Amino acid sequence: MNKVKIVGKKIIPIWLRRPERGRFFSFSKKVKPILEKLKKEEVTWNELNTYVKKSRRYDNNHMFEKVIKLYDNKVNFKNIHNPEFYGEGYGVDVLNVYRKVNLKNNENLIAFEKIYRAGSTDLKKNMWFYENVKPFFMPEIKIPSIYFILKGEQVFITYFEWIKGVGNLDNKERKNLFKLFDRLSKSVAINGKVLPSYITNFRKEHLYNTGLNLGGEWLKNNFSEEDFDIFISLNQCISSIFPKVKFTHGDLNPMGNFFKNGIIDFDRCGVYPYHYDFTFYLSKSYLPTNIYEYYSIVSEYGYLPKKINRNEMLSLLYFSFLFYSRKKEIQCSDVFLKQLWIELVKVYEEIN
Image: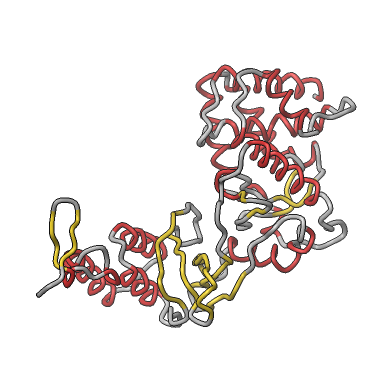
């Protein structure tokens, strides 16, 4: 007698259920034509990202691994088992579908699988951090270990230590963790070192450019063309106005990267302007209703200049406006954004 599984009000025979090929056998009707098509033609990186997202939608690890092998026949997944899809990302040079896996050489080791495009900036940044910077944060801040990297010709598959409870901190814990990370990041030895351009060029960052584009559009709709020109001009000269830099995580979103006593995801790290990390973190953590609340929060974190330094203030206000104007997750009001911009222009005119 065939065993059955009750799903909702339907009774489905167990033999129809194929977990390794997806949630239900019927998905194979969709998957097979896709795989057959891919065998006959070259897969581009963008197409690969599309197909792995479909794999996740179908909950189909067989399809996921097959399309990656078709893209890069030098990789295999023989060292892992029990894969589970776990979340999605937004990186340009990372496959934006992640998995939780068990490592075959040690049943107790659970890993987070992340697949990078070979030679990509994301991969280079991550490797640079682990080789040069991680020791400055340990043991005070926990950073996930890298168990191993599977190197193909087109992709590098990285297996990180699995971390529980990412994003589950309360406000006090987030604040204390940021302050600790901020203090330690200032201790990273960078003076006198020749750094690669992918570590120093913040203007190539997707998060920065999103703010630049959305902030510019917002100014066009709410202020004059002259204000827009000031904003674009600041993009070009902010590094010379306040040249101080420090090690920067680049994506300090407490809901996505903070966990108990630790921080993950250094794909966006660099040596960037002094206020870059703080203002991005601010835009993901606080929603001031006016400029006075904003200054109060900034003061709590020790980023309000103790002595009047217009150049430092301009840098703080510029990056704050840029990241708040993205309006991602935290939707700040236009009233606050207008006050922030007016304050910025006032300081800008005092300098000029």
